[in-house]
Length: 92
Image (cartoon, rainbow, N blue to C red):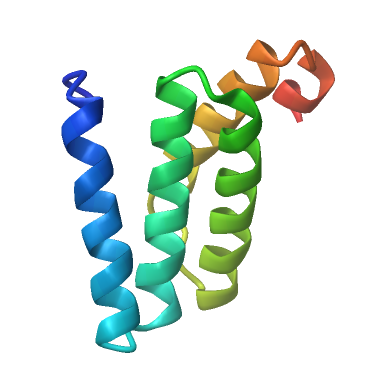
């Protein structure tokens, strides 16, 4: 995803989501997929979708106690808010 292979990343995220559902995975994996999908949205100029997905993913991840990648997700969330012209939200 960070090498710019966005088209290749999307099917992998779809596969992660399907596996998480099929295997009745923990909330952690479902939340991770949502947050990463939001990151992909942010990287591809879909700021509104990014805000919704990253916010949801972070909320779910926090509920599991996971926070390792939260700074990365917050950075992409801030970039999405900035792209939407919402600097106060980006700073928050």
